[in-house]
Length: 173
Image (cartoon, rainbow, N blue to C red; front, side):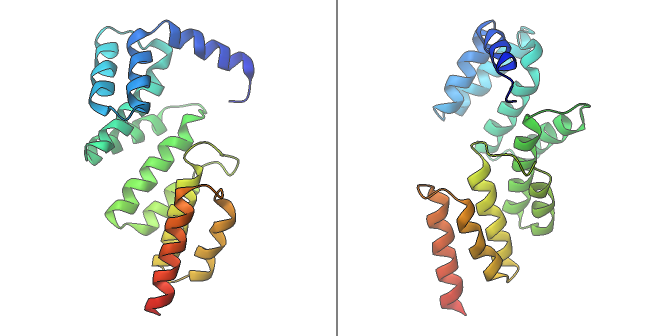
C-alpha cells in the first residue's frame, strides 16, 4: 500500500514479532530453512498476529525454494480465498503463475499472471513480465514476446534471458 501510515503500522507490527523479523532477514538472505523455522516458531507462539498473511506468503515462497510446489500452492490459494483486498494478492498470483509455468501449464500460468494488478510494480514485476514473454514465445508469438523487453528494466537479469530466448527461437526458425 502507498499509505505511509499503514507502512509505519506495519513496522510496529514487525518490531513486535522477533521471530517474524528474523524470518524476514533469513528469507532475504536466501536462508530458507532458517526462515521456515522462524515462521513456524512464530506460528506456534501465536506471535504473527496481524502479520499472519505475510508470514504465510513467506512460508509459501520458502517452500517453493525446496521444491514443495503443492504445499506452496495450497498456501497461496488459501491466501487468495481470504476475503478483502491485499497488496500480497499480486505476490500470490505471481507465485501461482510461476508454479503453473514450471509445470508447463502455460494457459494456467498466463491466467494467474493476468490476475496481478496492472499497477503492480513490486520486486516480482520483472520476473512476471519475463514469464509472460516466455509464455508468448512458447505459444509461437515471437513479436509479442519481444515487446516485453520495454517492460523490463535495463539492469534486469530477466532481460538477458529474454534476449537469449528470442535469439534461440529466431535461430531455430
